[in-house]
Amino acid sequence: MSENKKVVKNNQVNLLKTTKMFPVSNGTRKFQKKVEDFTCEKCNSFVKGNGYTNHCPKCLWCKHVDINPGDRASECKGMMMPIGLEQKNGEFRIKHKCQKCGFERVNKIQKDDDKEEILKRSVSKN
Image (cartoon, rainbow, N blue to C red; front, side, top):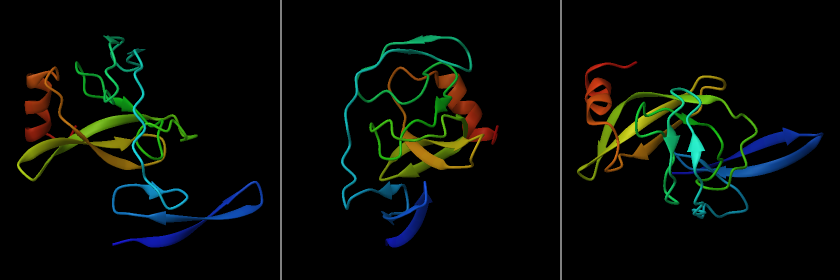
C-alpha cells in the first residue's frame, strides 16, 4: 500500500511516493550496492563492508544515511539503535530506530553479526 506525501525543502514542493518501509523517489526504490568500510560510531569497531553491510556486526547499531537503501541521500545522519527483532518469511531482521529523527527501518541479520547481541534484542527492546 502506498501513498503520496508532500515534502517541502528550500521552498520547493516535491512529491514522494511512500511504501511501508521507505520513501520511493522518482517512482523507483532501486537498491544501490555500495562497498564501503567504516568505523562504527557507537563501539569504534572497524567494519569491512561487502556492499550489503548496513550495521555494525559487533553492537548492531547503524547510521541513518539512506533514504533508499544504498543511496546515501539522507541528511539526518543520526545513529540508529537496534530496538528489536522481527520475522518475515522465516528470516529474522533487526529493527533500527534513528535516535535523531525517529525513522525506523529493518535490516537483515548477517552471518557475522554478534549472536549474543542478537539474543539481547530478542529479549529486550534496548
